[in-house]
Amino acid sequence: MTVEEQLANGVVRYIDRRDGEMKVEAIYGERPLRWVYGNPLGRLALWLFIRRWIVSAWYGRRMNAVKSVLRIRPFIEQYGLDEGELAEPVDEYNSFNEFFYRKLKPGARPVDPATDSVVFPADGRHLAFCDITGESNFFIKGQSFDLVQFLGDADLAKRYEGGSMLLSRLCPVDYHRFHFPCAGEAGIPRFINGWLYSVNPIALITRPSIFWENKRVVTAIESPALGQVQFVEIGATMVGSIRQTYMPGETVAKGEEKGYFAFGGSSVAVLFEKGRVEFDADLLENTVNGLETYAHVGERMGQALGQG
Image (cartoon, rainbow, N blue to C red; front, side, top):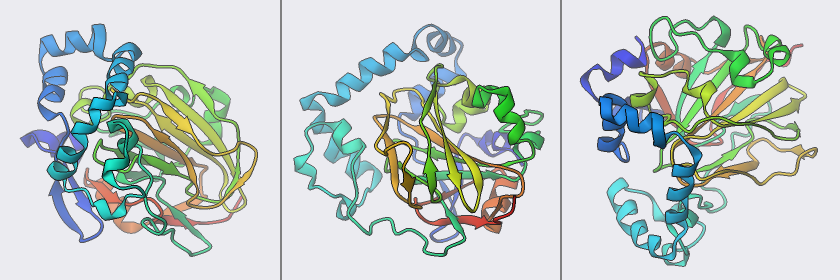
C-alpha cells in the first residue's frame, strides 16, 4: 500500500515505535497546507510565491522577532511537548525560532551502544528503502526515485545504484537538530539550490519529485563499517535555513550533532551503498505498508554489514 492510499481518507497515519500503535498525525498548519496543494488557487499561489525562498525568509524573520516568544507556550500545550527534555527553561528563549531549534538535556536522546548498529539521524517519521533505484512506488504508484537529480551528480549516483536509503521527515513539532547515524570522517557539505515545497505527505502525493526539487545539502561520511554514506538535508516551506554545527574533515562519533533546521518542517535522507546496511524488520514492514515509523534520534534503525 502506498502513502497515497493511506491518505485516501484525509489523514496521515504512522506507527509509533514506542508502543507499536498506529496513530494519526496532528499536522501543523493543516488547513492552509491542504488549500495550497489541493485547491487550484492554492496551487497557483504555490507556483508564484510560496515555493520561493523569499517567502520562507520572510516567515523566518517573523519567527526570530522578540514578540514571537508568545507563540511558544501555546505551541507546547497544543502539541503536548515534554518541557522536561529541554536544555533551557522555556522563559529563557528569546524567540520562537530559538525554541524551535532547541537543544535537549544530555541523555534525553541516548545513542544505541551496539558497535554494529546504525541509528536514526533525527526525531521524526521514517521510511526505509532497501533498493532506492529499484523503488517504483515512491509515495504514489509508478513513481521512481530520481537519484541523479537528488544527488546532483550522475557519477556519484552510479555508486548508489541498488543502494539503501532512510528518509526521515521532521514535523514542526519535532526536535529539529540532526545527528550522524554512524561514526566516520565527515566531509565538506555541498549545497544544491532548489525550491522550498512542503515535505508533508499531503504535498508529496501531488508531487513526489519535491525531494529532488527542493534545496538540499549533501555531505559524504567515510565510515569504516559502511563505506561512503551520503547524508542529505532537505529544505522545505518555511524552513529559514539549514545550519551545520560540525567541523568538516574531522572524525565524528555515532549520534554526534551535525546541525539543525530553523523554523519549519523538513527532511533528512541517509543513503548507503548496496549491501552495506540491513534495516530493522519493523521499519521495512511499515514502509512496505505505506506507513512511516516514528522514532527518536539515536535509536537503532539497522545494522552495518561491514562488507565492501
